[in-house]
Length: 466
Image 1 (cartoon, rainbow, N blue to C red):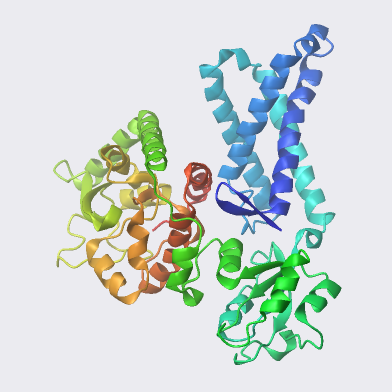
Image 2: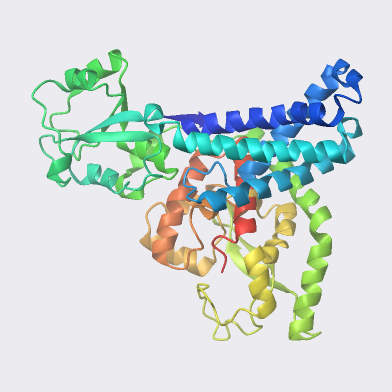
């Protein structure tokens, strides 16, 4: 069962797991206090307010770090060892974050030994919670029971959601064929009704009916669906259901009227002000931390290619409302990478990439100069990836709704970059566009913050780099 948080749908089991692990981290501070100080300093428990504040800060910071290493990603498929590595990495990242908080708020400091106990108890508790959750908790009880009205071309898109991670939030009970649709869905998944759909839905404990008819102008079951609604059974359009469950806008079943009448796609002065303020603070803060690394990268480029070799690479990209700007990156390819003047997609194991450039691409260091683009206002910290004008003109002609991704500023990181690996073809561009449109529709400050946290997973594990 998905619930909406930060303009984004999150599956209920993941929310419950995050709450449980947050409480474990909170309790770890009290456990550390007991193990470290209880016998020697009985007065510790008299200052309950300070200990409570320390526990809250510790728990929230740890949760943010666990999000950053991908432990709450709906499509996380790491095995036991992978989860262990991510938990340890998350706690380590959280300890770095808490150390920074200590410098800003010294009153929260609770010592290195205390630190170690709290971290150990957190790792132990989180691993135990994961084992119990995966072996004891039956996720079926959290899933919504779904019946699809329609068995034609539109309904067929639901049969593509085959993986366990694709069906984390629902259990698909079958497809009801309707007049006017060709039965494309496999016969073994069809449900032939002998009673009205609202009666069947009640008898089968259906939570949602998804309307996926190819042609609603013929024999639309208005009365039956109305009865479903008044009996507490949700009725959803196919597009809204797919958006919620996949985190993207499915172009193959979308029509322009859905964009016109659906919620989202908001642009207002307050949102733009908050977004710009966030961009300025985040980019300036990251530059203040990353400048030594940027100097090392510049020296490494010079060392490999010679003192006269350019450090930066400027490239024309398409930004907000189709305006072209010069994107700034550390040069990761040879100086004459496009000697013929023709724009080329970057490929896996691209021969044009230098040795230093390969390292920078894997670690995303080559992206750091884009912080200057953010400060100038060409880009935002979070948004669709900016593409080259040559590619955009081609994609605008061949992919429907591609222009709509330019309704927001492009970003250094974004929802599509998290959900889909590096794209180097029209097919990849089409797939990433569906995630970009989801972001354009649902973007907001807290959703941006969640994307930034999850970007750490991409950097730490080198996902999608080329």
